[in-house]
Length: 296
Image (tube, rainbow, N blue to C red):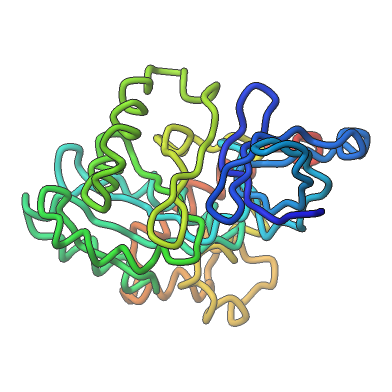
């Protein structure tokens, strides 16, 4: 009999599938390997139970999206954590994460942490003006973090942000059961080691949250890089101006007559967001198309 479930962990060649509140240790059926199809954490799968807690995965439901690093599928929301102090806000890291999420069809949610240390008005305005949901929290004040809980219901979520922004602390404030899990993760965040750890989903309410090591610095490699011609569509505040530029091939970085640049000068588009766009555009311009094709 075929069952349906979600892959919540991959480890040592086994896929751990949650179905009806139970975890099954599964192998992938040979036909998937022949078709070069490998399940990812977050995949919805059909599997056959062969023993009380073991099974075999028969097929993978088509994915909504997937990330290369860490390898996880079907992310609905990405919580982009920006700390107000210690460390100082890094809009460049935040904007890279946001653009990559937009490119993958993932909803970015901005979380400004450590608001007990100062005024977050400037950063709230940047991202609210750009059209994002923004939440001001302090991980040491659980009542401020509680507003995030409804956003997990029925969703697969993940956290990202620069090191020290407070991702694990926010998770602990959301659910005390994460204290052990995130503590273990934090101890293993040695430089360069996060890329070899397994990915796992943790239950939170009626949804899931991915563990955080692969998202710690969001250092996108070429597999998650965005082609320069597509980058303009990953900055949602650009949308009203894209069809009004003087030139159809406008890069929106320095051209005269560019309506996006005019919107920046008028304060309609936040300056820091356009600066991040220009920096990403320059990086993408240095990558030849064959590199994109090879990596994909």
